[in-house]
Length: 104
Image 1: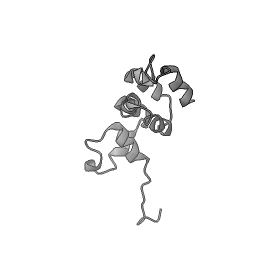
Image 2 (image 1 turned 135 degrees about the horizontal axis):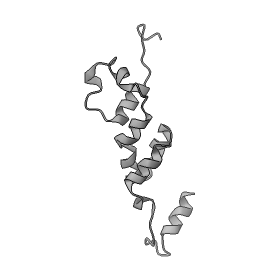
Image 3 (image 1 turned 120 degrees about the vertical axis):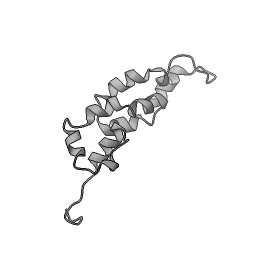
Image 4 (image 1 turned 135 degrees about the vertical axis):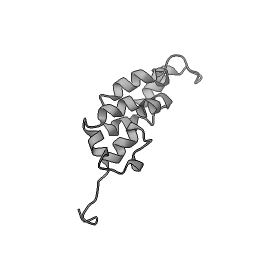
């Protein structure tokens, strides 16, 4: 699929002829990302700069967090989540939390 997309935007000598994926506004990409799963968002973030910027947007990750995420953060020492982006908070809350001396 990627090869056919690049063929549409390149001329015969390799110069760009028309718009490409990088021309999509970051805000539009962020709107689409709200409908995707976190692994899908991370995979698409590797495609280009606009996708990477949208994948780091707090508005995207805010929608992926549970509605009670602030209550969950209250159980974590504040220094572990202060100054973190919503994406980083999502990653923090997605990690396993061992207890019972790491046995569970």
